[in-house]
Length: 114
Image 1: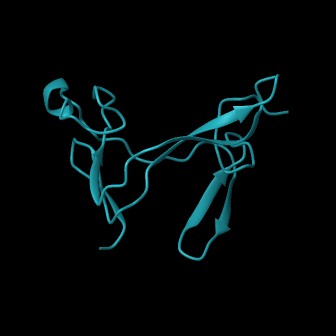
Image 2: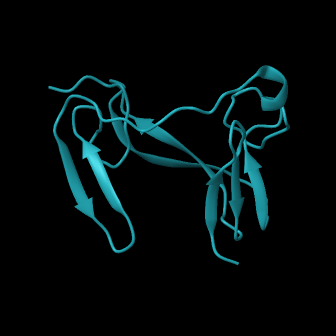
Image 3: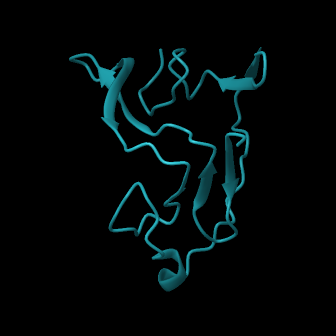
């Protein structure tokens, strides 16, 4: 089965193909500046699962159907900010990195930049 993430209209992300699910967090220094990724909880391997997008699930990160009760509308779209975007071309995917918002370590945070 092909690894795939699909957006369910006004619902969760449907993940198929046995994609592993591992939590992650940003490790910061004493001043709160992002330094690296930390590995979080390793979730049970499943062939198919649904991830919450509405924020209301009692079983996060998994969907429990709350989106159908709380009126969730998944209309968000990816937009570009005001800064210059640098493109990093990969074998299968391209990464667009907006340095104003990113810590040059392939994750984004709200830390101020000098």
